[in-house]
Image 1 (cartoon, rainbow, N blue to C red):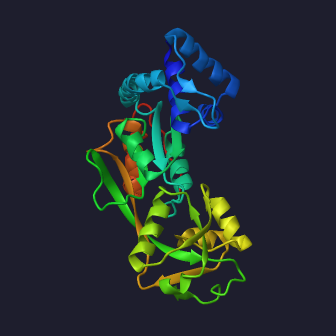
Image 2 (image 1 turned 90 degrees about the vertical axis):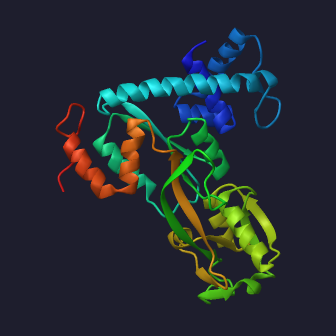
Image 3 (image 1 turned 30 degrees about the vertical axis):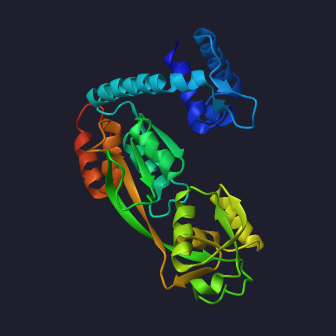
Length: 312
């Protein structure tokens, strides 16, 4: 049994299928499928039920899951220890995010981090808040941007920074509310809605807002991708409640909702009290204190493995 096979097994579990897993592992699907098949032959049991549209774990697969996680977590810990000694010349940081993150320009932040530590591999996963919390607890993620339902984070998870995002109603350009600027919740009773699938952080926030105000929404269409949600709203299938930045970036009318003004909290979280992975700790410093991170990076430039940041 090879570590590579266990990593490919976990990739299928994490991404829900062989195609997405191969894309995440940067290999062709046939190679990943062959790797998992070889693992199944070595273990003498099938690990996935491949008969449905989505692969699911068999009993043997569920039995292997905790051990695979433990082995891979131990491997990552060993890599982290070497990375600490090597001064971040090499290493890996794993960060997760909700799909509708708008309070942080994550691409720009990761690019700035990469310029300073080009030898560190960045792994980015997009998932729901419960899936991200599970990834943090299992050691599969170092950091994650969450939109938690509750005021308190789960045990063992620490919050390192918090943002508040305003939620607005977005409509098609010719909609009756497009030029209104603001509306009340009760004015939306007859509106069809486009929404995310149940269980996502944004869907939960909107559902709770509607329930609090006694609004029974008529969901015309539910989706799993924010781009598709925006396109459907633009086409006039329904309205949606999203973070203001999403509507503005899409060029759609953004209508403020009054009484109450909706919003949600986004938290950058990780395992308490701080990441043990040096690469993740450096990224956390970047995400929570960019100026302090730059000073620390300059100091690191004089040490083995450090890279001097670009001028300016």
